[in-house]
Amino acid sequence: MDGGNPLRVRLFGYGMPYQVQWAADGTVVPLAVDPAAEAERLADELTDPPAPPRAAQDPSVWAVSMPFGRCGVDGLPREYLLPLQVEEAYLDVLAPEGPCQHALVEGAVVRVVPGTVIRLRARPRPGRRVLVAFQTEDRTPLLGNAAPLLLSGELPAAYAQRLVRCHGDFAALQARALADPAAYRADLQAFFSTMAARLAEQSEVAPTQARARAEGSYRDDDPLPLFAGQAALLSPAVLTRIRAREDGLFRFPGMFGAVASLGKLLD
Image: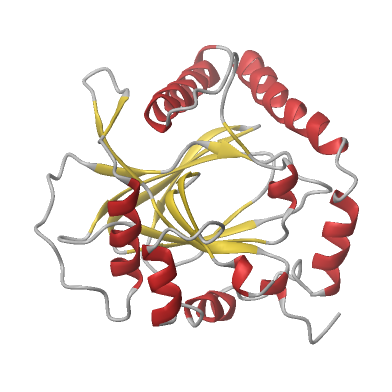
């Protein structure tokens, strides 16, 4: 339907990914985080123009997302990511046909489709923190259509242990794709099948996607105007609410670390 506003039905906002270092064996070593300080820093980085740069950090520190994926419903929703304030950035992908890596360019949108597991990793420009603007075409992830990568067992409650565990499983699947492609595909399918079984129990999935369709959210249009639309919502009052860690507007931990989720501004 023409004339709709896809932002009314999307999950969208900004994330400031977790900071980590890489151990000699390739595992992640999360840096300690104070959620209040992360909220303050996120608001500073989202200010237009941003607050003055801080001292450049250790170049061994990287910003990473939680590795996560979506099973999808009829191939939807797609997700759009816009990396900001990056000097070097990559999207690592686990797809049924095998792992791959995409170099990202600041300000260029990357599209993510269901049935893949993704991990963002990046280094910031000097004195800045990495940001990622995100938009998901519908709100089915709130119903279970999204999950951190976990191959077995329980998901740790503490964010640092969760990062270590999920990045470890991501690395294990990358290695398995080379050693045993059939086992790799089976593990990936099991991860998505578990998610799909939970999602099938949610009666709100069909109405949620119907609303998204009515607003034109699934049209494969240029996403940049919608990213401009979400940036326009970042008023001084909204940034103050992010600093105050308002429930539903700011959360930590999220898939992208410290997250400002802006959908409630249009509800």
